[in-house]
Image 1 (cartoon, rainbow, N blue to C red):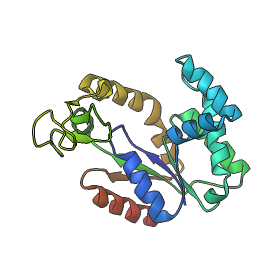
Image 2 (spheres, rainbow, N blue to C red):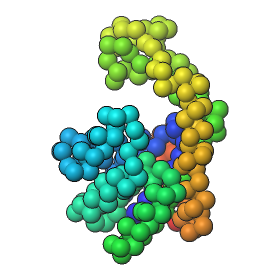
Image 3 (cartoon, helix red, strand yellow):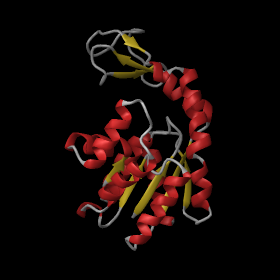
Length: 216
């Protein structure tokens, strides 16, 4: 299957993408991984992306699209792939259609993870990270530490990242609504969108997604 995964920040896209890709035996292709791989390998596209990033500018769509195209042409993606974080806007969605058509391929589904905005804010703004080890992550509601503000693992101080503040989360949601959400209507016009609730336990959401994809 060839799938695009869409959803607001805090919807659990990264977690679900990993599980779905494993269950479907297809590669999980995320924008972040594409950037890191191309930059670390010193590819032409990676060097271009790094130049923009170092200057504090957004990486142009054509660079991102080029990286995605190269990745989708790799042998392990011959039987499908799951795109996470790409396309990010309608222009990228249109460019992806052109790339797929040129390769005589088409998308099978666009999986839309639906989460109420207040839940997104609650999920992200409640995260607390250990200053000693960022792998130690807690949540004030869902996975609270035994002692408030103290890491259960190493005793380090727990803090809220600036990116996780409620004000920042709401700004990120505004960007999602204006830039990324329109691709749902774009793909809905092609009868590709499958919307599921991303509320509940991780395995429940994965099961819901797998069932919906099988019907699509």
